[in-house]
Image (cartoon, rainbow, N blue to C red; front, side, top):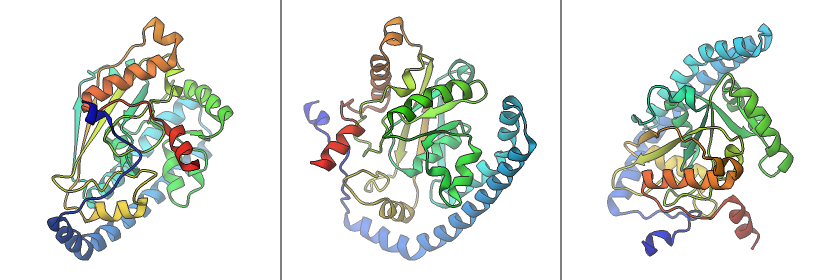
Length: 300
């Protein structure tokens, strides 16, 4: 157990075998060109669908409840296009394991997802019926991708701003009346070898949460998904993942977690206990490292 806990979740290195290099060559020559063309085409289609849907919602001037209802209808073709895009990228199988029961959607309006590994974690949102995410404040300005972000009706946050993080709580309390919201409580990407300390933001609401565990399967090859602050850049990670013949994702929805009176008084305790629950489901060590430690290490 000591060795299992001696993990730096912010460092990632590739370890290729001979067979992996062969797959890399074949994938770069055959798979990547085809997948890039198909995924870019489908992404453009999804972005145009999302832009049209956003245009309709902006001009219909609906109240919040009706807007949420119509938004759920209008984003269906966008979601289907995104799933096709991920399929073309090699994510052929996504398995949903539902341990939460039939009423979890109503009992818990807040979803906490871990571990947060890479941009490919977006796929989990499709499996969770596209709840509203918490996104960086500048993501809506990204060309093409901003249209897709907007149609999900996200809660925007400036991660390094304390006032912005406080305003998020008020926005979440307003949005959960109409839509579920999901958080990546680790607040940063890791190498999937451990869970980092959960930030208390999602737990300050004092509401029941549904924990969700993500498990990727890339066979016996190296982990090309993980994108950490000390490791390959995101474009290299994407390229190497596109070279793989297949990547599978298992999304496990755990039973709704209701906070105790002690946890309601102490959001950090609430966050910790949920992280323990997820670490047991994932069979990963639960560490006290956080995004703030990443910034400290970068400074040093």
